Length: 253
Ligand SMILES: NC(=O)c1ccc[n+]([C@@H]2O[C@H](COP(=O)([O-])OP(=O)(O)OC[C@H]3O[C@@H](n4cnc5c(N)ncnc54)[C@H](O)[C@@H]3O)[C@@H](O)[C@H]2O)c1
Image (cartoon, rainbow, N blue to C red):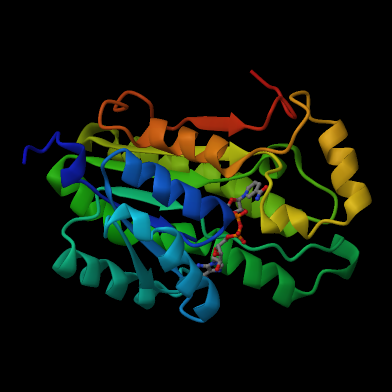
């Protein structure tokens, strides 16, 4: 197998059993990657159904438990993967949570819990894979941000701050790794048809859809397609980019 053979690359997807993460795993497996979905072991039922959903990929998609908010747990995971599956060549940080409430009511716990997953989690994972990628001269990192990081959103000072931070982090890391064959980009989904958006009250969701020029919520496949594009072996000249995938909900230049 040559280094440019897509099947010689291993992709790690955090939040890999989630609404977007599952489809990202599938899309990367279709692109010939060996894929490892990382997510919380505590989601036992979902882990079981995930295994059933990806069974058709014949072992190309594996599951590994870890908590991205825990620096040591991420280190142990990356070491385990390197022993069992080989180097991590592609990292997609899709783990994320919301703790929505207006700032006037937000507790320090709601702020810190969210930061620990949505922002520290990106640091914890990148920190442990970037050295190996740089040494091998190849890496693709995609961090999932959000349109709400670009525009701000009512009730989401914590989430918007973390998601904007994810892009600042990505641009800085992109500069540090550009000469080592490692690209670092963000994908900013708009509102997608996933459990995270299903949790929004019906009338607010209807208003959101009415404001999307394309006239529908995004599909996980719309986001996964952007991730596959940015993680392709021949995408080496795209770095420090934010790729919005939002149906025209927020346009900028
Ligand atoms: N769904 C949307 O419309 C939308 C829009 C913009 C951005 N996003 C972002 O896309 C990403 C994926 O969202 P989703 O809709 O698939 O959400 P989801 O809730 O379906 O999936 C998120 C996954 O992250 C996992 N996770 C949470 N905390 C974790 C931790 N500490 N360690 C490891 N895994 C953890 C969850 O178990 C879950 O499987 C998130 O970062 C989210 O902020 C989603």
